[in-house]
Image 1 (cartoon, one colour):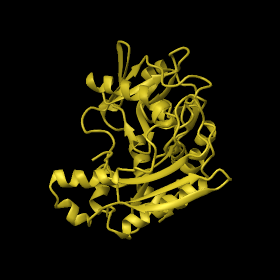
Image 2 (cartoon, one colour):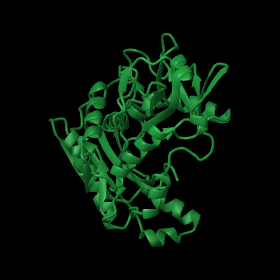
Image 3 (cartoon, helix red, strand yellow):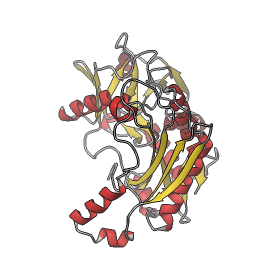
Image 4 (spheres, helix red, strand yellow):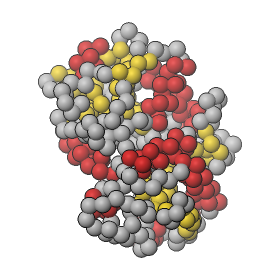
Length: 361
C-alpha cells in the first residue's frame, strides 16, 4: 500500500477572509466504523470513499485546476509503541507551505495554523478508529512494511478563469493510510534529459505544476524497467538535481555523503535536512554542493533518495547514457541502512528523539 484515496472522514478547510485572517472549519464526511467499512463490497466501499472525496463547496473552474496555480505539502503521523501518534517535523512543513504560497503571490497560510490543523485532523480521525496501530514486527525490516497516516495539505483558489493570482484561497487538509512508496523489485535509476525546473522558476516551491514533467519521466523510466528517474541541471545537463519527487544522496569512496546544494531549482526537502543531521550525528562527513553525474558513477559506493513518501530508498544502480554504475553489489549499504534505522526509529518511537522532531497529536 503506497498512496491511497481512502480518505479518512475528518477533513479541514480554511479560507482567507481578505482581512488578514483565515476562517477555519473541520468537516466530518460520511463514514461507518473501520470494521464495517472493511466488510463492505468493493463497490459499496468505493461509493462511500467517493463521497469523502467530494467537495461541492469548492469551485471546479479556478486558477488551481486551470493553470496549476497551487501548492501542497506531505507529512506523516506515525503510530508509537505506547499507542499514541506523533507527526514528524510539522513545523517545517508549515514553514515550507507558507513560503510556497508566498512564492505564488497568494496570502500565505501561517505555519502554526498548519501544525495545529494537522494535529486536529489526525486526532479527530483517530478517535473514530481511523489510524494504524504500532506493530513490533515492523522493526525486523527497518519499518519497510510499516504504515502511517499521510497528511496532504493543499491550497485551492477561488473561482476564476484567465491569468491571475489567487487572493482568497482555501487550504484543505485530508489524511489517508500510507505504506511503502516504491514497489518491491528493481531499485535501479536512470537519468533523463527532461527538465524538471528552470532557474528563476518555481522549482523551490512545492507547486502543483512542478510534478507534471517528473510524472511523465518516471513513467517512461518504469516502462523501461527502472524504479526511479534522476534529473540533471537544465543548463549543462552535467549536475544531479533531484529524483522524480525526492532528493538525491551519494556516499563517495572517501566516506563523504554528498547531496546537491539547494537553489531555485531544487526543493528543500525536510527528510533531506533530517538525513544530513543524522549523518553528522553518526560521524559521517556531509557536503551540500554541485554534484556531477560523472562523479556519482565513478566514485559512488552507496546511493539513495529521500522524501516524506520515499523515506530513505536506496538505489542499486544509476544509468546515464551508455554507462551504468552498480552500488554495493545492488544491495543497501551500511551507511544507508544505519541512516534508515535511525530515521525510522525516531519516527516510530523506538529510538530517542534528541532533536525534538516528533510532535504528539
